[in-house]
Length: 593
Image (cartoon, rainbow, N blue to C red):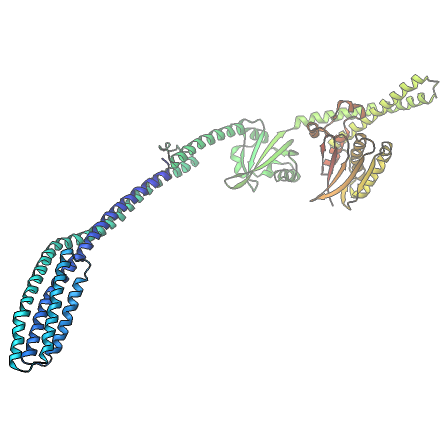
């Protein structure tokens, strides 16, 4: 049963109990109030009967005094008493609590009262016309023998009526005590209900709070790496939450153990630091590579691990995403010796604070191998380019017939040999360019260049090839300026344009344009050619990479690799986008002035 169902059942039980008590007490009080009203009616009935008897006695006395002595004020007093008698009877007959027997008796009393009042008023009226003592005597005789018997009958009826209601009042006395007891019970039950409800709510709330407190304590224990409380039993939300927390804590422990194992055993130097570049941790590989001990961590800053401020700035720029990752830097050991390293950085949040993770790979052996390879390429290139140039000149002499007549078949073979020699010379030139760019031996002559001029010169260089295929060249002005070596930028753009013309059908268009993107100028070359397959798009700037196997006869596969190296030497990048069958777009991104 979940918490909602428990709360609903709890509140429903209390509500039913309260409604039952209130309904029972309400019925009892209603009955008690009805009996109280009836008791009040009985009291009023007894008092009215007594008042009627007394008033009739006084009225008779006033009438006798009026007839016998003509006492002053007797007539007025008599008139008021007669009116009061009639009103008293009417009020009794109008009581809503009168029973059937009461109504019958009251009707009889009313008839007698009406008759007696009418007779006494007749005596009063006749008194004013009687003169002799004999008339007065007859009036007195009438009152004694005619009026008094009815008065006695009325008194007997009212005495019975009053006696019966007095007996009823004795019964209502117990009802009055019961009503008072019920009132006390109602108030007591009300306060008892409040106290019981409060006690149940407090007990229920404390139970929930205690269970939630266990979960909160589990969080504290988990943070302190202490044993957790057992999983709480039940099927409500709190039990489910506690169970989920235990499952999650086990998963986190497993993930933490896995991360620790990776951090400890990874054969790569890993460094963590805070936002102020204060070192927080090194894995064993980093301790060994940088020759640092755990005792030194509190006094180390990230800048202590880099050979120069420039290397440190490269690391921070890479961590902040200002430079692509990985980057090549030089690091410093504890003994002040330096070594080349490939650095990758990433930032993450830990306890609400930014942390940086740096991964270092010692590339000293790789650098030595690259240096040997570059030296080998340079030696081979120089040793091949000079004899190949001489061979090309000799083949030209043979082709021109300066060394004797050559047959047509021989001329064709000489042309093929000459083309292959030219291709080999271009290949060695490209290899030399790559070697110089990678070693930093290629000196860039940077000046402030107008991109519009550079783009026009690049178009002029490929104009003849475009006309041969009836391809339209289009240039969009930009008015952008970049600090660059114009010859090398033209080399990159000519390579892009040559490829666009080479792989575009006749009659199509090739466009070049430049736009500004934040602090960079983006130069794009767009064609309407065959496009590049999606699985090849990420490899077009690699060395000796051809989109198709039959493209190897059209180039060495080093042109785009050289373009990327030139762009990186300028602090920029190259990229490509393409839709197969619709065309391609190559980008050169350079910092603006």
